[in-house]
Image 1 (tube, helix red, strand yellow):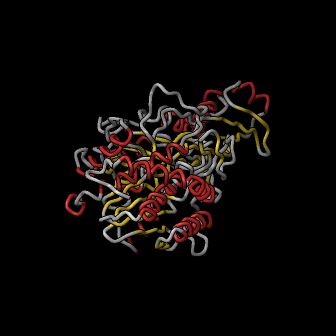
Image 2: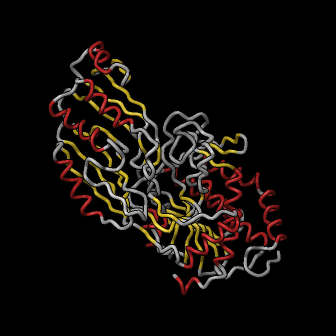
Image 3: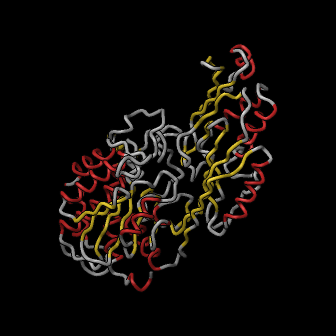
Length: 482
């Protein structure tokens, strides 16, 4: 395959790339389907599998795909694995094989790939198994076409990105292997994310509950706004409950009291403003009903206040540095544990902020309601200047391939870019057109949502962009600029 001059590519090169992508469509779909069918939610250790059977099975399957294509593979004790092509130093591509739980309200099977009108549906198709398969086929393209590269390629696949426990997979990876010279993470958006906000996680633990509040639970993972929540109250009748809550909450008899249920709209905790928290809706509904009082009311009032918006306004931690998006605060999981109410904290703070003043304000705020803040973990912000040569190369390549004029941005999400040295998130979401309505029902179609979706066109466009980006990065002296 011939290339000439600066890598805008010849028309012949681009035609051959398109033909190659077209000829691999069936294989791409089959490989992605194989991964999506594996329920790879990160969990407790099982034997030699630190995050359980699901992520380990997904890693085995992905490495087998790489071996079948003729690449070298490595398994880092089921924390992560890598697929390599070419010599060192390397350009890396990082994707994760674990997924968030499926949740509810799907219109398709979450653990299979459903292809409808050119759109793929299934848990992980966009976050992050689909991008991982895309990256694997980028490597296959260079191998099939025998294109010489100054920098080798290495796909690194992690098994614990979604748990919110500090990128334990990448921590282990860096202990037993070396990071690539420069890495791209297809787990955010184009044209390039030159920064990521700080992420503060922890647990609010209440004082002991009164006997009237038998249980309270909602949500499945800390980094998703919960779309369902329920509580059981004792000492009241069904008729009293129905009269008190009206149509605010669903009411039914339970074995040990009356169950109240609330529904919300799920969304990723990094961008929660279009979501509705079922946990907040449940707490507020019970407070408005007048069925709770005293300590129980105070414990529920904390939920209502700290989630009165998703910016921590009432807690006094709202912040905006105009470089990144405003601070966000989400209670993703609520559950009663040993007679106390535990609430997960997922807070994302601007790149110019520091976490300690935020922690101190949250601790003081929680104390007034009978809560303590525990198990704090702080993942500090990541930031590259927009004029950094690598950032400029990524942005320019994207814009020249797509004809857009997009600018790099700082995101609220936390990707592997912050977990290893010299990495930035690059794709896979395209800039939104505000004039084009979402093709999915509200609360559906996005990462961490029911009916998670990614179009085949977007997958193929990402493959084209990544191929040309790899070639342009090969024109740089990465050792000197990083």
